[in-house]
Length: 231
Image (cartoon, rainbow, N blue to C red; front, side, top):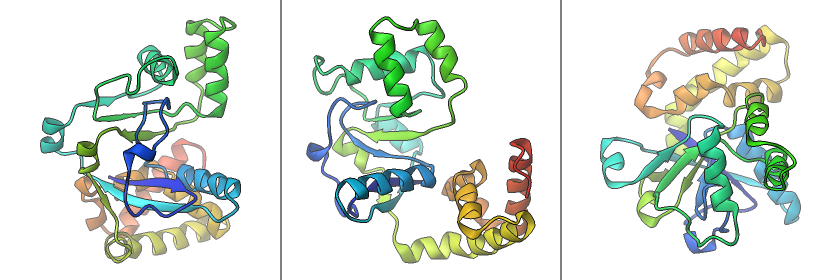
């Protein structure tokens, strides 16, 4: 799976001791499968530090060996277990780390969700009603690598390697998308890179990159039609 990290600097080496504690899944190095989300974070971080944000790409290998050597927790969606886990990790009175997982994957508690967590902890909203609200929240994704061992599953993507595997598909596909939809290049690219189709394409284990770009474009059309975004 190709994943992205948004920051105000390009990531050359990962030092977990420099990662902030008491985040959603605890102290760790966070990435997302949604490039657009990483770009938004990079922009915000760059603005905060008065420079341009940077998105660093990695390949995450989640194979049988990784599952054997790493303790992994995966949350499929916003649910009661996810909420309890986030509250546990975000509580500054709890020890750091507050869990024993090497890798944790699941939805993000963004600014809006964090504000509602504060309301929930203050007793202003019930857990049942809060979880009902979360059903309508946009899809988000993050993976937290909590230990040095977990970081061995990440490989920084070399630019030349990215070109060889994806560029020959991305460029003609986006060009066709622009022509069919009438969108500008940036909008079309943002939609494509945040789509489930691209997530599958970027996941090397699917070998989707071996198929013609026209076939992948048809997959994208089906996905967007279901979301009422018709090219």
